[in-house]
Image (cartoon, rainbow, N blue to C red; front, side, top):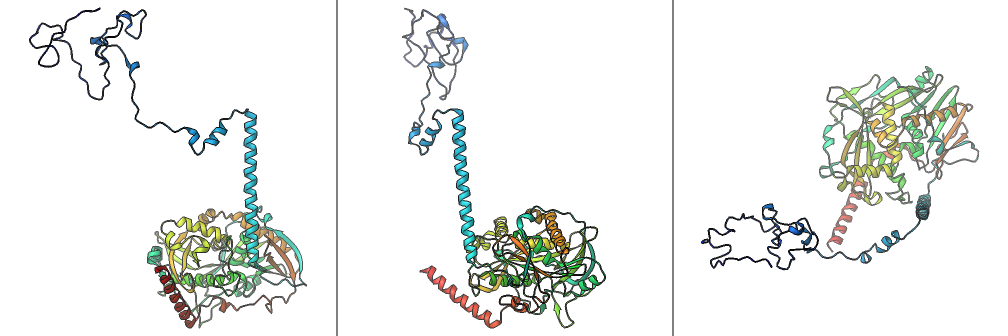
Length: 559
């Protein structure tokens, strides 16, 4: 045993002060904090003469195992005996977790080739399930939309001979590059855009006004005096309007039926539209999966919404302009307006494209306004309006989403109105407009189709917007070039190109020379009746009915 004496200190810890010569008097003191781990001060049970070395100190390790890290005290490293107490709860057994079964399945021992085969089978089952759901959805949507009575835009008569049938799948593979167009004639006058409408939002909306005194013209190709003059001067081979060309260019995106009259006169080719044609109206929710009401008298039917959209679009294109008499007048006056009429702010640009060495195309293109840019130059605009009729059909409430999620609103419109937006973009590209203004117009109340409010106005550059909606200009001109080449091979006469109401294809019919002169389309309406606003009596009656409906809804909400 090792013997040593420890002096007694009755006044406290450590050696007494009286023992100045004590050997512990000058021993160094190692301070420590409460966070430091403390080892043993003295181990009375330890064997001072171990049979074999243990630890770093070996047989010469001191019985004083001070763990303060001071080498002068000969402290041994005793960290191996230190244990930290963990106060956290013990983890749950994995078998009680919600995904224990799947974890166990993944842990099953399998050969590598068996795992690959199992994954392949699971992927195949998942693909078949997705395909089955996709086909069911398409079949269901087709049945719903067929139930909505998609009829042909024109009655196919028994004496008509079908010459060709072109599926839209062939259009997607076409591509043709054309050069920059040449401006031949410019007619009409346009007003300047009111920049205050760029600050309109759902909280500070503006009521849509009615422009009864201004006249809007929807003149077909062969009735245009300027095109007749250019044809007599042999300025081109093919003649059309931007509305007709846009319908052809964007035909793969169309769902509703439409028709274009083709007249071959000598070596000239004219693309026309019938009076009261669907091309004069604007489709609403054409590419949506939600079916619209079938009854034509319903305010939310496809026909009623088309008339309403055309009415909203015309009035919006005039309201966002500054009506102070300051206009940009082009070379010639409006070719369709008489002296007693006040034409709408529209300019007509007759532009010529060279399709090949022997074929040139002249189209009448419209611009609706002008704007002075920051550099002092003038930019031409096309102005159009999207209209919201009932949020439950689109699933997006413009009044709530336009300020915070404008991209989501535009994406929904691109899904539900892909054909209409593509046509507007194609018309802006054809007319050479610098900016296309797009307005968001909504009903004052979902059941009031007479009164509307402007919620927002956005501006886009046509080429950038075309890239955004995946509209390929080369493919557009490829479709036009293929149709032109097909029609130029026909004999002189009258033909009609009809979009099939139930299939993605167009059919070419040969019709008698006097066809469409009596206009035997189903329930034809004069153009002025299609786009004229309702009378004051109808508007007041509708407003009263809407007010009564609102009062009833508020009472129901209170209850």
